[in-house]
Length: 380
Image (cartoon, rainbow, N blue to C red):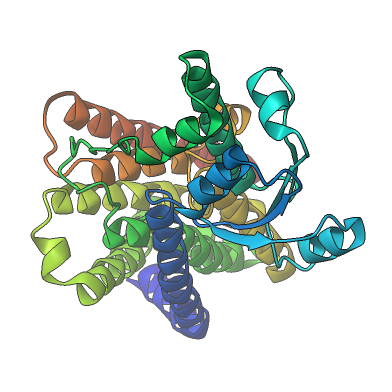
């Protein structure tokens, strides 16, 4: 087991690096999870916006609009002073400014004049307020056309029934992504970073200088050397995978163990392991010095993680990026992970979709391994 011991010895020399990546992984997982959960919970409630309200009309309809928006948002009465308005918007004292001109009732109810509004560029809350103002104005026009006065129209809008939203929990997750789903989302980053760097460093060490010639001249056959190398890589990969699984259980305990998707999380992460091992083998063969290895590993791991939904969720990525990411194995890992997170009870077509994503990962692993073996044979 000379080759196996050599692999383990070099692995021990990189134990500090492994611990560092584990610490980074755990830190990123906790921070990203807290950040993502805050963003997702905010998406399902009415967001309150600080609105600067300039009323130069003083009519019943203008007062009604102010009261209507005030039911959800914080209304800040302001004077029509351009410099003051711009200053408040610049310093984020307000996020949206609406100006009610004199004669608003006639212009609004009898004409098609739109209100003058100013909002922060690219702010989704601005579009949210736009929709509410349009809803109020359109309702006022409908009431006015039916014979209501402006006062009656404003009063009718305020007294109208508020729409109630009922979320259908088709996946039995109560409309929320479980915390452990975020944990498993970032596992590819750890596996790719650690395995590619450590195994890549080991393989590059075995291909330096006269080492390949000495190994060829040794009494240990080439087949035995390859088997011991695969055994060492498998041991390192399995140990790292077990640490990831134990970390998830430590963070989430019974919540994770009793979830309907726990077994699928395990299988999906285990499927990602041969992908990472095959990539690390290819990286180790292609690189011959630590500086080049570090650059390749960082580019490979971070590039895949950003493009395939690890650091940026798949539903946020553009269609073109996702189309390109389908040619990378991590994309299919994240696709399976998102599907598992969405459905608590995995049956029928959902189960088929998850198994297909796992199968595609294994196909990628086999293809990458074949390429690595071809490259290794050519360099020998």
